[in-house]
Length: 381
Image (cartoon, rainbow, N blue to C red; front, side):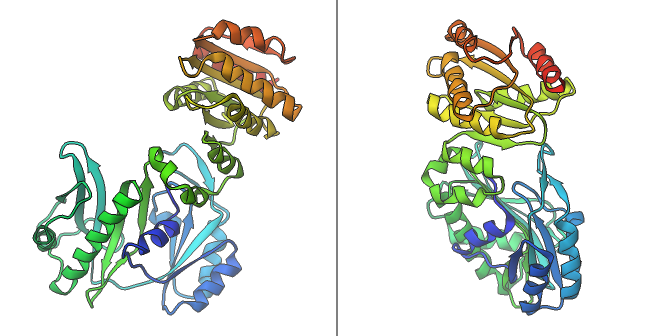
């Protein structure tokens, strides 16, 4: 799970991360008001989209509250693709941050390296725009921090020296490293990036941009964080039922059991020149009722004109359980759609027999490609 930048900074502030003063706005007028309240001569206005890695082209450096309002108005009309370039997300919030003049900047990240069986701190000198810069030794420097227990202070200070971090900032760097390590473990993070981290003339360290990715498999330990992902109402509802659901902007509802199978199905729909409306991955242990809630979200979307269900039934998730969930959703919502199915594995025959009672047009396909083609054809009728 990825968070907005402002959410990341808010969370990591509990672990010692400092950043320039900031506020979040949903209208240009609010953005202007925030800028008025900041003690700054310049301002950075950034669009907030989940899973988005900030680019300079999607941020503004401006010098007055009036310019902040204009920049926010522009960003709030934009759509920004996520890191994978899969989904165009509307910008619904902007972050207004006080501009700072840094002495230096470094790019910092923590991640799990299976080769060393531990968490690694990686850093590189850069300028305030994130471009690589040469200070002291060039290139990426890495330090293995272990698995969440304490690590030698001497190693961190030596690491700071290799990065040529000024003497007056090394204690702050050590404190930040310990805080980020604690955050990584306590939040079940899979990656933390502070890029760039500004080194101020007085030795203070300020995060100018931050990214936090939390391991989805550990989200059950952090129920309070689910609300932070709230951008799309359907996705929020799906999370409450522990369904992986991503809203897209097409007209074909896609359901599969397994993320890999789901993504492959989406690729085939696109190859067949169709447009998926969503991606719903049904987890192995989902009940029929939970599956029904997922299908109900698809059926509630008036843009969806056909369903494509690609299921490979296993021991815990037979095909007929998925079909039962679909039937429940159709009865509850009162809506049925042309449904293209590719069913294989456990109880596939029983599932097909049940589909005949649903009163909608069913197209039974033997393979994924023909299923994708039929789903596209049904959506165009």
